[in-house]
Amino acid sequence: MKVAALVVLSVLVALPAEAAQRRQNSVSPSCDNDGRCTTLNAVSSASSKTSSFRAHRSTHQAVDANGNGIMVTVQTAYGFNITVHPAYASKFQKFYALLKEHGYKVDPRVNKCYARGGHVSGSNHYIGAACDNQYGWNKAPAYMYHVGDLIRQAGLFDGCRFGDCGHVEAVRGTHNRPPNLYAAIEKFKSEQSTANYQP
Image (cartoon, rainbow, N blue to C red; front, side, top):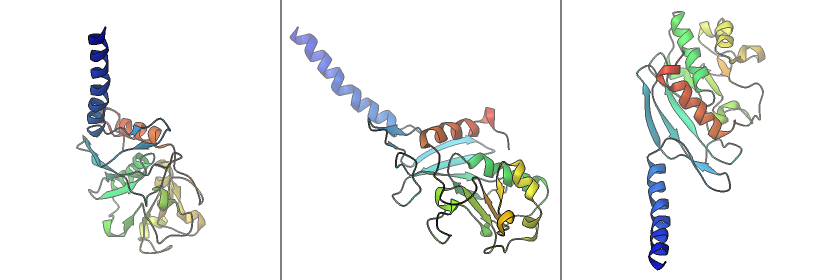
């Protein structure tokens, strides 16, 4: 009986150590019993079309309903990277793919997405749900004043509708909350997989 108890105790001690090792090697967030999830510096290659993403965690980033902060960095059709919330990454990638497909020349120096400051209060940039293709408020490259149909095809909203052409957002208005992190990560991984990739 003592031997059996010792074996059970050994297994109970070994399993958490093995689980911790698996969590460190996994892209999926690890969650505690209070529903708080974290993903630290995960790197995964998805396909040659989408390059790779990096999940960043910082106390200064947007947080989900559980207080978790995360953004992903994805490659656009032009080859430069953007950082957005994982729930919106595929929409922004589709937008840049549509721009390229229609022959627009996009300057990566005027493209900014996730931000920690410098925008109006409650900006969607703070939750990784907006990208600017502009030099300043309503000062965008000429084509941005004429691509509303491409923005809508990508499932995004055009800033020209409220006087800020060059601003593109995934959710309308200000003071929005990012979607659930766990669901967003699962959807992101599915969308970024080679089998499901659709620019």
